Length: 232
Image 1 (tube, rainbow, N blue to C red):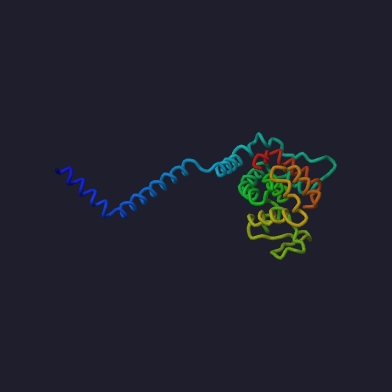
Image 2 (tube, rainbow, N blue to C red):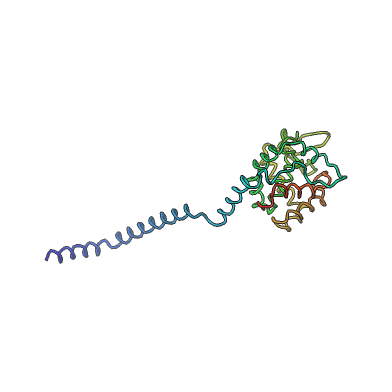
């Protein structure tokens, strides 16, 4: 009799409050599902994010080891002296490596946004800024020796009679560089994709990115010396 009474009471309660009970069950289900999903996301990050993270970790470890940079002298073709490369050869290997490590993440980020090989970005910055030791790199944050040009309305800095773009941070220099070599006459380079560092290097030379002699060979030499192509 007691069993029948309890059953009747339960049935009667559910009948009168079926809406509230159903709503409570749905809310509980949603909370449990959200917690489970959050737990899974913490343990297993999406494949794309995981790949990017692995690449960035590799930049900070394998790419700049002494084994990858045994020779301080870049493989410059004989008979074609270059002011930037000659100056770069006077920079210690330790300082070059520190510079590459410092801006590796920035270069990868710019690659993902603008489809430019990160290797080309890093090599060009290292070459043109003398690993961050040049006047325009230290005093104007210009990592790529980009000149003012008629279209430039930002800050300016005169060095040795040349008008160079001046930035408020090194990061702004990298961003302006990305926009610069993916617009105007350089826009055609984007069609090459972010894996073709040799074609990008040759294209930058052909389109007169800088006054640097034998630019493509210098960029390719830096990229291959430090295995920067592994972050492309």
